[in-house]
Image (cartoon, rainbow, N blue to C red):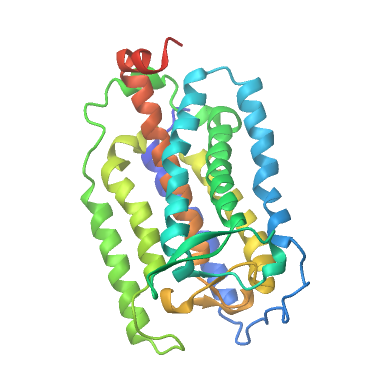
Length: 321
């Protein structure tokens, strides 16, 4: 069956709704929040450090498959070039906003190697970011992209573009403005700001900075490249990637990181919608994985189109395949 990207794209959001609605109904019945582990010292020695294996082990397996069994050099190049653009997004988040958005109270859960981050409140660079945070973003982007690539090229290969090279020739302009993305993004930020300022809560008022960052990281690439990449994205591979990464994040964050305070969230920078059953975890902790998966896949498919489309430039820059 020939893949239909438009229908598969819509089915993905139907899946989200089918899972989210009963989950929200069930979680809303919890009136008493789970408690965090106190005191946190010695509660999980090097827990954050060792937990990075949740990303590292799948990465090693898939990257080995990519280089040992998958011989499409152009796919390998698209993979690594995409990461050169994506990983700095995580570093920017940490270096400039990490100390504003997050907290790191359990110092026994990390190696004790700290890098500087900007404290916007004091406008100072403070050495308070554990090195695990940077490894987290490096391995996170690699894990998301490698899982999508494996699903697209192997597990769900029947639903990708049969002749990517020929299809890419039909792309006249890679950057096609998608105004719906900008409008939706602005409306989401406005709605989140109104909620934070109008709905009573312990941290009512202010601006939901972390949510705004996630929206910008998702909708800016979407506004520029969604129209040109939509039909190239293997939406079944995308949905499998999203649900796999979401499962890892729930095991990681809701079960371990939040209770043991490997990292936490600055409530003043959040919308104020939390999940009591998950130790008051903010909704942004779940939304981040949709944002990361969406941005990663759009970035990868954009690079792949460029490498397939402009053969002369590809040969000049990278050599013959």
